[in-house]
Every structure is written in C-alpha cells, then in structure tokens.
Length: 298
Ligand code: HMG
Ligand code: MG
Image 1 (cartoon, rainbow, N blue to C red):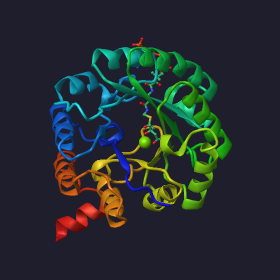
Image 2: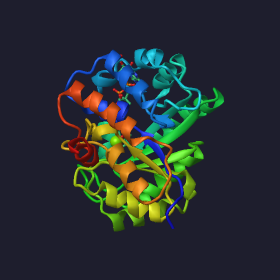
Image 3: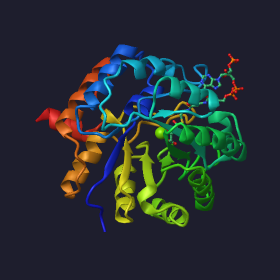
Image 4: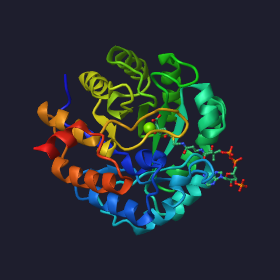
C-alpha cells in the first residue's frame, strides 16, 4: 500500500550544485536555501565538507552554513566522508551529517579513493564521533542499481553495505541510483534485499533521472512502503564521478505525483517552483522539471 505521507529530502543545493558547471556564488546558494526553507521542506541538504580539489563547487560550504537563515524545525545536513569533514561540519554547527559509501568497488575508488571495506572502516569513527556530539547521521549508498564502471550491481552487496551503515547508527539509509539506469522491478528487488536488514521506515530512495525512470522507480518503492524520497529542485545536478549522470528526480515532479496520489508532503509546489526558477536563472538554463515547465507555460 502507498504511504500516507512522504518526507522529501531536498538535495539540490548539494547534489544539484556540486555538478553544475556554471559558477554559483555563495550568496546565490544562500538565497536558494533560504527560499527552500519557506516551502515546507523539512530536510535541505546544504553542502559538503569534502576535498575542494575533488569537488570545488562545495568549497564554500562553511560560509553557506554560516549565512543561511536556519529554521528550528528544518534539518540542513552536509556530507562528511572523514574526520576532517566532520570537523568542518561541527565547526559549521551542522546538526546532521551524511556519510556516503557505494555498492560498487570501482565507483567507491573513484568517488572517495577507498575500497568499500576501507570506506566503511573510515566511516565508523566519523559516525561514532558525530553521534557522540549529538548529530544525526544519514548513510548514502551509491550505484545501488548500476555502476558506470561495473554495470549491474548485486542487490546483496547493497544490502550488506546498508547493514554496515545501519550498524554505525545511521538513522536512515538513502539508496542512490547514481546513473539512473535502474527500472522499477530491479528497484523492488533491491529494496527487498535491503529491507532484510533495515526497516522500511529507515530506507530512503535517491533516484537520478538520466534514463527517465526516476518517477516510475520511486512509485515502485512507495508501493513497498518506502516513505522518504530524495529530490532536487528544478532537477539540478549530476555526479562528478559518474560521467553523463543527470540530475536527481526534480522535486516539482515528485510533488506533483505525490499530490495526485493523495500522499501528503507538507511542501508547497508553487514555492518550490519559485526557488527552482531562481536557481535556473542563475545557472542559465530552464528547469529540467517537466511539471515546472508545464505549469510555467499555463
Ligand atoms: P584523498 O585524496 O584520498 O584524501 O581523498 P587524503 O586524506 O589523502 O587527503 C588528501 C587532501 O585532501 C589533503 O589535503 C587533505 O587535507 C584534504 P592536502 O594535504 O593535499 O592539501 N582533505 C580534505 N579537505 C577538505 N575536507 C575534507 C578533506 N579530506 C581530506 N573532508 C576524500 C579522500 C574522501 C577526501 C576525497 O576523495 C573526497 O573529498 N571525495 C568526495 C567526493 C564527493 O564529494 N563526491 C560527490 C558526493 S557523493 C554523491 O554525489 C552520491 C550521492 O548523491 C548518492 C548517489 O547519487 O549515488 C550521495
Ligand atoms: Mg546523487
């Protein structure tokens, strides 16, 4: 059965902007996040404390975190792959971090310069310290339905990495179809494998829309009881370590589908569109969201 309510995790300011070629200033990032804070969204991923050599677009995350107007009922998580990243997150007074592993050895190497096992060893002390400092920790897994270097990914590997991240205290595991190649039945099989170790309420899905499958995949997962969906305003983004990957499923498109299904989100589509219009103007291209374009044309 479909859930009554779905939590949207807005990842545009991080996943979206980390791979946009256009220069986006700190001020523009702050404006985007502040606009998103007015929409009803309760989770807005706002930056990444990663190596600026690897992802220069996120180099100003400390400044972004310092300047946004934070609302007490909204979480503004940041990525933190190692203890140095956690230090940055703590200094920025983040209340939530995300660690990010992969279900593919080759992707793990290219994204964070570690094998899967090495990455899990590195995440454990990060999660431990973050929890001791009172932060929430979210776990991501990339390449859950396919890898740009290895092709098909075995759902049991996704399940095993999920189990490890959960054992570190992650309150939620976000399963990423990084390159958007997955289809609904594969998504279902993968969720079923993960659900052996992680309660369905603690599973989030993170679809990139490269092959146009994201909404179909999301719907298949909703039918299994998944009630957390990552999405990116205006469909911003991609991934710097997955060539050709396009943005996350657009928040506007997800909202439209959920509204049509009678599923609550607490998020105002019109206000999300305003934020989407703002950032699309900044990067100089129309929103990727089909719903956004359709409603603008009316
Ligand atoms: P490394 O080179 O192996 O790290 O990178 P290192 O420990 O050897 O350090 C090398 C240099 O980086 C040193 O500086 C460190 O200080 C610095 P140097 O002495 O050369 O001047 N450094 C850092 N600087 C700032 N913040 C840090 C940090 N750590 C080290 N936290 C590392 C390993 C993990 C750091 C690197 O590979 C990295 O930053 N990777 C991040 C890649 C990334 O951000 N990818 C995108 C996010 S994941 C994603 O998009 C997928 C997702 O959306 C889900 C999906 O769709 O699949 C989540
Ligand atoms: Mg992503």
